[in-house]
Length: 234
Image 1 (spheres, one colour):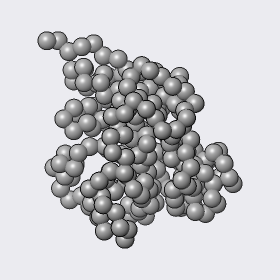
Image 2: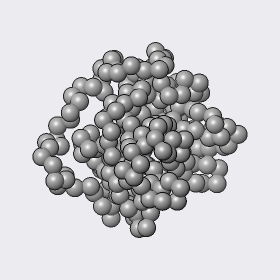
Image 3: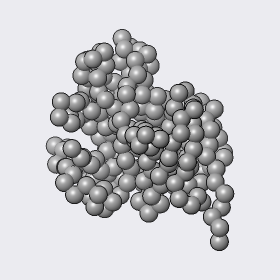
């Protein structure tokens, strides 16, 4: 089963509760953090559905589950208040890429329709120019000036260790990145043309990563490691 969720739709609705066969899955997108994440929508072995609370922490969306009204941090994929506080959602691999790239590799894909039942002009973003601005709309717990706040990064967590792979660094590197994080060997594959990053373990399994703006990743993970690359040979 392959499905695609256009950012132009997610910019307005932010959450899609979906099913892949018998599996409940939630697709979430925070326009302010540029972060798209997919989760297995099961808590305590029961399916849950999520909605947009309208609340933010570190400029990142807080979801709520419709069963208990607990609040969940997207980037922490964890309940931070309510009856389910402390529960963690299982992240699933998701790819951020162009529609042309996805359609070429998965021609049988199902595409989320613009016929959502809401009156929206999906050809226009509700946040024009935001991704280029130096500023962030809301307060942050931690701030780093190491990169432009809206620099895209691929962030991952392995065994309690966090690491970010800024696109500006990946652009300097020739070929795949072979790395070790939290004692685990991994391979980072970067498609510069389509801005797609995938990470694989040494046994070939895909590892879920978070694509987000640098400011958002750092606000939640100020102790993160950062991949840096040597400039490509001329």
